[in-house]
Image (cartoon, rainbow, N blue to C red; front, top):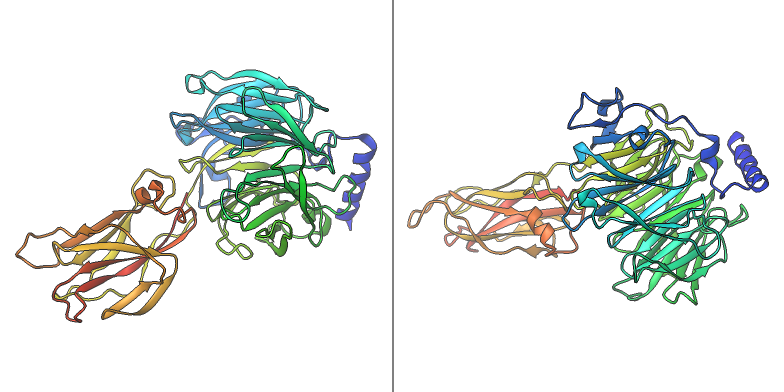
Length: 552
């Protein structure tokens, strides 16, 4: 009852005193900024007393923690974050702060370094995105859209080159960029819906249209590149409390024609609180939504709402899932089959969403060890898209976190190999860690095969255990065959079991040879080889099998 009373009182107060937008729970729950020194894994004794071991975690390691004083004595809070990678491959965190936007190099995640802070008028709320070699920053304070040139960031130079201030209010709650189509979307700010700008000239965004049917808190614009919606530009717009504290929901908009935006659907879900932010699955079949006030209003644990969006005119509510924490869900993003959530007081949570309505939490990092109560403190946003696998998070009171993620289970063997004509049973194995981004090898190996024979690794995404050529087929069809290779070993004419194979699966992943293989994909693989004297009469041999999940 108390939570419901607070929510209603908050709604009344918002209307009466005219806060910048509908989401001012952070005002009531404000805590002092943490003023300790920064901490870096490269110099673990030189940082804050609250070092890596102070934060409970599983599968995630803290590399750097830049506290708010690192960015200036006037900085009182942090808001959203994003990432930028320069043409040279160096990686940078973009961090929205109370009085500006920071650029931080995280190429070496264990030694994050501040490059620059671009000043702006004060606001608790702010957002930042990147396109081409520019960053774009907005705030609820009247700053317009700041255009920041990152072309010379590798040399330590970051420059504010433009400020876009039309049309209407100079305040915005968030912004988003459809990088495929090259359009920037301002959401919210003084009750606005969407204001849209062309980035044909990235240094000078040009206003091209708007949608003002209702307030938009956050928007996710995408361009479909395949399927029945190929070529369509679609925006998933979260409407906060629908400009009236009733019927919070999601709008699906066809924004292909900016001067004639077409609403496709306006959907709702049970026990609504506040439609905050949404992000689609990698295959564009599902949409994951954060409701920022369901935990506060109904006393439920952290819940993520799931819709089937294969028919954009009729999205279907599939349900919601929880990890049992009491914290408020805030922002989320998908990468492959992984879902990254910034859930305020419970910190970063990572889920394997291979099954989107019943996912498995595989890793977490608690940024607020004091409690997981549903208050508006700690982790605001997360950015998981650096090619290196580095993940960053922005924390309201604590600044910038830089992480590396392990999280996924170790590779495991299963099934039974087939004895060859020398009586040896080939065995599969691995060294390294499977990763969609790491340059380090993940070698899937095999031993005890006949020497100097051609063989190959084949893989699929499901296990099998059926008779095949006198042995066991351990990978379910359909499967993919990799290139033939020689087993090597003792030179002919000797015949023995010194043959071995090795296949660098990480190099294969990063070559893009199979686009279906993404982070958190479960892979099953097995080796096949020729055996001219196969006692079963099929002229081949099989290893046992290996199961692994692809990491970041």
